[in-house]
Length: 374
Image (cartoon, helix red, strand yellow):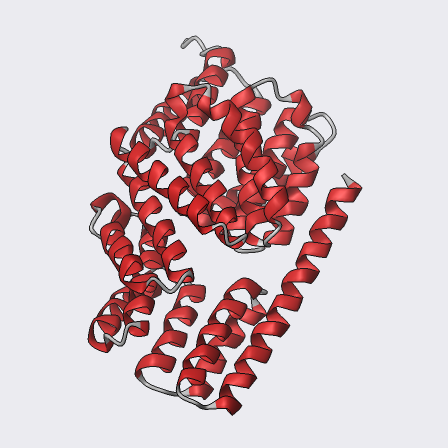
């Protein structure tokens, strides 16, 4: 008769697996999953450990951009994770990872709602790095709805813990970039540029090519916002030259989209079309409806003028409540036609941008109400 494996070492292995995921070590995390999964059939029966395995597995799927699989796992274990006998830590992870899942689905207010529930249980989590991870993810969500001061506050809480640990250099880099992203929104250009450059150098020093590419991408956004298009183009080109960046389908689509957009704005229609077509192929392969719409918008503006088709794709972004994207792209369209001395069309899209910004304010008010209720 085979002796069953005690569940305690399996639980410890799950903790180590989760820490590996937080360090963004994808290859090691995948290997650890295989090893742990092999032990589960021979483990002493313990439902807590089995639920914990599923939760961490959902988190790994988020890391490797298998968002649908992550959502399926969370739905599968929802009843077990939330029933009364389950302890607060399991419920914390369920709401935290559910928030992350909603974030990746671009449901930002739903993400924050889940984070607020998780935050009530955060005090029961003894690990400081886990608390830092929570603040980091919450900071990203608030950034997306342009609650910059709240985002900066959470980012500062996260950075303090990450900087104290040399083995979390990847998260330290990303926190610096998150600070910079908020600085861009506040139009503190010099501060943002310096932070991005520091993050890129830190990534190079630690041989973190994924973070290096992300740094170039974000620095490119910073330059594009200031209409420094040549510098922006150089940054996006640097990002797409990094092989590890191209392996991340969703991240590479963003960089190729921005490179195409900048090239179009510079009047380089041929190269703009080339990168738009490459990015569109990637987006279609993974069913990325948001970037398909955004790629179509720049195409129907700069390349094959068709405002009806442009508006159809803009409606897709509106239906998904991606008001920041709607505001930004509407302003791009408005500025383009202003330069063409077409005041009628320009005014229409400036008005569209204004309406989208009103929607952002409503999201901000909703977020503030959530904050007050917590």
